[in-house]
Image (cartoon, rainbow, N blue to C red; front, top):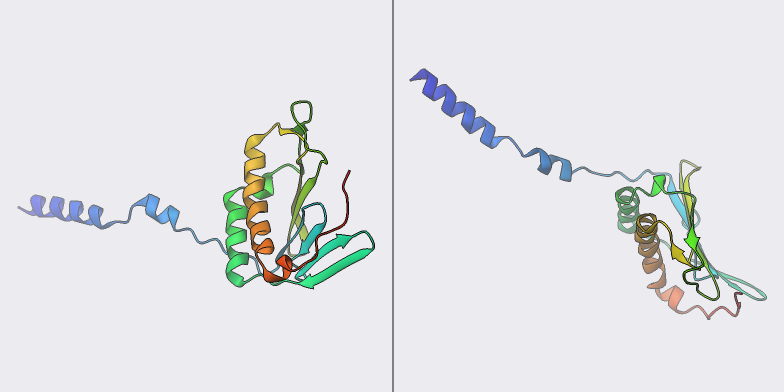
Length: 167
């Protein structure tokens, strides 16, 4: 009888233990306090989260505005950076420009800093077919998240278009 009771108790206890997959899926990613980034996009726009400035370049000068990200946007961005293993991307993702090209060619660029140190900087030239589609996908997940936040702000939408012509 004691054996049956002990066996039943062991089965009951093992059923109450949380699933290891559930534990792993609830890992909390904490955003470092001194985390900031810089991004170049659209050939003439630049954002620096350190001082929360969005700059658009024109032929005869720049326009700079303050655009602040929310705490939630910063935390979500950092989570996306970790999920896409951004810190292990190469600094430049090469393209095969013989297969296709975009005229004019443009570079998209993201630099991530933690504690004042560059954690990674990645440049993608959009002027050809990517040789490493996995790296481009991971970069785009980070890049597009940032770009979407910035381009949806009222301040960004009210900026006059840049008059710079890229060649």
